[in-house]
Length: 231
Length: 326
Image (cartoon, rainbow over all chains, first blue to last red; front, side):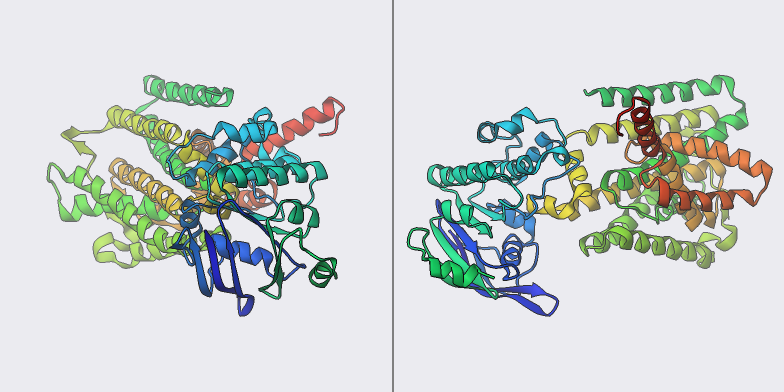
């Protein structure tokens, strides 16, 4: 269980997260939708520890995680794929994936074979530099690297940004499959409705640093989408 | 082993072989001169270990070389003069002093999140402070004049001449090869990832400040060892061994040889020393002018060192020749 309670964080004197409360169960895909600037990326950074929360609690499998440095949170079972993918451009594909194994709790430094089964292109390009891959390939690498740590929960910040539709579809399928088969909990931030709705069990809407509405993709009404997303 | 690694090993062993044969042909003064240059090369290797592998430039590395030099001098002249074990104690004291300074300063700076240009400026200030202490605390350091009378290295028997030369060659190449082997695997990978983007490495579970501090301290220890050995050869220590100019020169040695390859730092040091001899015979004031001009050129034209710039030019030239877009 990833439990977030009244989380507050910001930059300088500006409070961006004004009390976020949410939870993600194991095996569940939750997406957060919202306009630009409502605090979605800040929430991701606060959860992984890149910015220090001002107040509130984060519990990862029942253990307090708020205020810990990123490496401790990662080793506690939370993986993070940042916006813009965040791969190491000067490292090869296999080196990028190997870097992902540090947070594994079984101590193994070997990239699991199933990563290459999920993303065959990574096996094909294993010695190519990360920076020379296309956007879609980089996103697969970023996802593969995050999964190489065998996390309990996965944070994804706008994985569909700038990527062709068939790869977005593929990522959605993989997330659903991992949730169902491995019990992976996924928290997904999106502006792209396709992925945000098709992959998710639950949809949260964010506005001005708070979660203001919750729904499921099936019961979601047009009017709600319009209210929280239309510009 | 990759092709790149094979080339590296070949170049390293070739330089080692040339240096091993040199005493058979060189004069006595030639051998001791080259020995001093190889100790500066060891110093350059220490900087390359940190700057080359983490991408963070230390402008204060003379602090560690100087700490090793002064540590050795103070121990063998003041604290334990004439004792059979004083050289060993001097080595331990000098290297230890350099390590303690690197650990203390590195801890606060690295865990305090100081990176990039700010790190360079803080370490530059460190050299200035260390230099002021070396000049000001004259009862211990001898002030401006320094200390004269550092005995030759004695480890059971006195180590001088060709024996000392071969010891220096062995220490230098032992360290270069050990660092190369030690940084081939996972540890080297983490450092390259940190150079690429430290925050990303952190979110993957790496305690990146700890990795950086470990490399910084190891780098300081090696610089201290170079300094401590150096003064047993020259017989004296002076403030210019802990000065800003030396911090500047060592950056140039690494830049000329190419950042990150370790053996490049050795080659760069030897090339620059040869050049310095040539330039200095023309005019005594020409050398500082040359260093200044080199630094300006480095910032603008070849921030990753001369070999990287040459390689870039080469690929472009080849591209033009083959008629393709480079």
